Length: 82
Image (tube, rainbow, N blue to C red; front, side):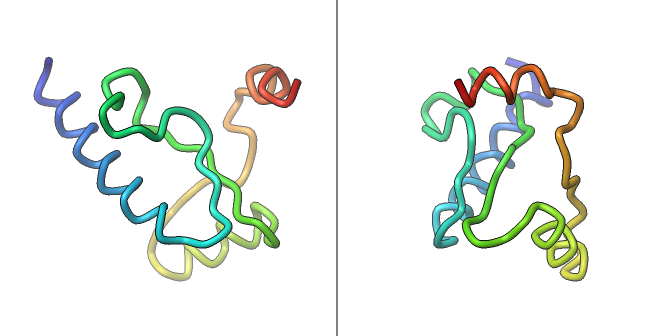
């Protein structure tokens, strides 16, 4: 495994540890830290009671820069809803 992949997995594990502490936050995809090698280090999330724009604006105010949108994976997201 490359050093880049190991670093990404470390960041992913850190993100997931913090994400589980946020009530109402849903992380899509693999969340089992034992399976991090099977996923990319990009996360799609939703927060109950808030729009994506509200969440991204709040995070931006905290210095965490995220994207509130479909990240060019519309077909994948539509398929996941089925």
